[in-house]
Length: 188
Length: 281
Image (cartoon, rainbow over all chains, first blue to last red; front, side, top):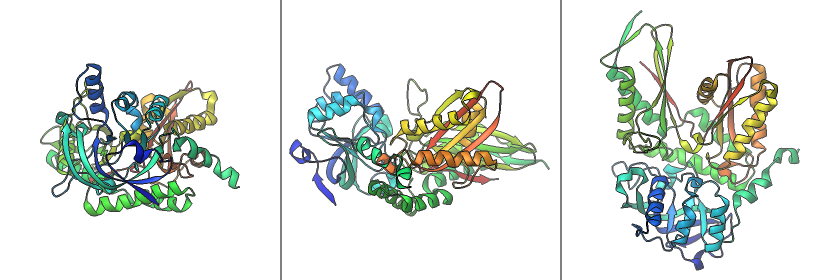
């Protein structure tokens, strides 16, 4: 069973979420990956205003394929989140509350998620064709010069995710993999 | 007998192979994903495998890429020594084909011109091209788009001969555990043992092209493939890294003679979308 949550998020909507729970997200969010994060961090370091207000917003680590004629967007699955780790605590400090990606995060990010009561969701890596069907609209919100790495504002409808790191800092990668380690030896 | 091949035909072939490879997975890969779904015991893992199967069907039906990371195009060319290329340079024709395929196929431009300055080239060029000259007058091209979620997790080590087979196993299993969820498991492992540093890496990449579920014809290497597959699938990483027993779908090892002082090992990690398409002229 999945929990339905409307975007944008706020702390009351996510405080009860637990690692491993399935969620269907609907509403708007922003895509941003390596190059956009580098630019956002640079702007913060120089004291500039960010091109999008991140307060209570969710970032989807994704660089979609171009839309073919008649489509809203091309394939649009998650990219590896860990590459954004060095930028993430600063963005959480500036209001970011949700992230969607794949792969584990470093200790600093987990600590920042806990401190801010934020949430890190996972979408199925490699399922970009399937996930693109849950995106209803897409427009460039910042850095158009970055091509696929531009920040896009996208509307999602019942976008399927799993809670990877919940607001208490519990990480499903760290808890679940242990359960299945050496499974065959135990089963035999 | 000498044969002349026009560059524009090479460009057309490469363009269509880029598109096909990104939309439709080879049947052997689709088969091992399907059988993995029955073997998986973790509910989270089963859900990921079901998503991947559905994703393959959507990509095929709607003619859109399986994954948004349509990769860096790795192009393997086998050209007979009796073939003459006319109308331009072969590498230019291949590069033009990649540009055409990625642009007309609405696939992502993922290549930056300078690895440090990082400006996107806009059409996914240049590809990485490996040309092999063979006897006869055949001309065969394989396009293998490689995504970087998994490429980034690949590793190479120059082992000491004394580390032997145990050293190889430990190195590969460590690489998979370090990779965790990042390469989008279930993965396929291409492993190259022997040669020099670059030869090990190249045969690891070529090993990914081998049909999933088949073994190396050398008995001790075929056994090693089974041992590594078993160990990797006991890691607990599972589909999506969410825990489970199907971490890898296949382990393909290739070997090459090496130096008395060395035991090079390269492991090229690939996601379930181990894409490749082959065509001839």
